[in-house]
Length: 205
Image (cartoon, rainbow, N blue to C red; front, side, top):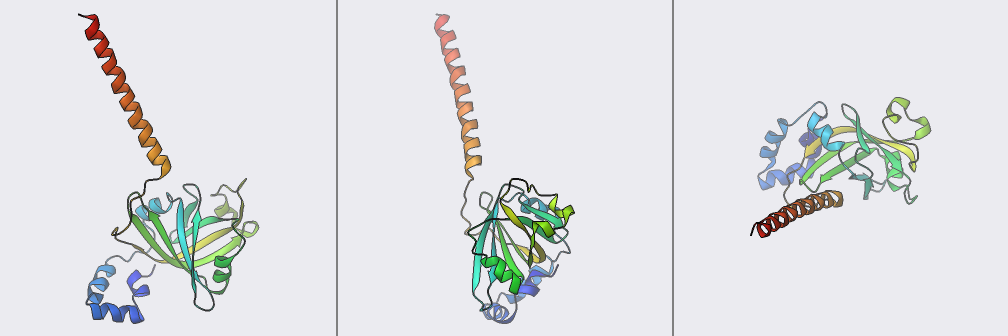
């Protein structure tokens, strides 16, 4: 993969960074963060997401951001620098699909609000009809009974982890419910134990 700073800190971005006195620091920091492929940590993060945001640009340069979601594991790493997910039936506007047909460059934001983590992926996207997809890749996905028509494949060109500053902390409902149930069960057990102790004390008088 390319170095994220070499890919993104160009032109006016670099000029502004130089004017603000941070360009050299960024270049030095990012040179140490170049990697050839997605790491085990990266893969684990990617494959435990339930959603991500994908940005594309139309022929006039207007950006568009779309939210993609599914069950845990719906986004998979299918190669050293390749991720993919099923393209579920949506509102039939096909904006991202049309953009990618003209310019395959996309940017993905993968968020973990509970742990305040954020991964950025830059890459080239392809949308493939399920009938035309590689069977070896397709068998990694549960396609039966899903409202999916295509496979979205992104060849990652560069990646970066963002700092957690300003990311709000949100706890998923299932995690909150599980914690509440566990806490309630512990409280009930403690209450039952205290009742039993109190009954034993009364009986001993």
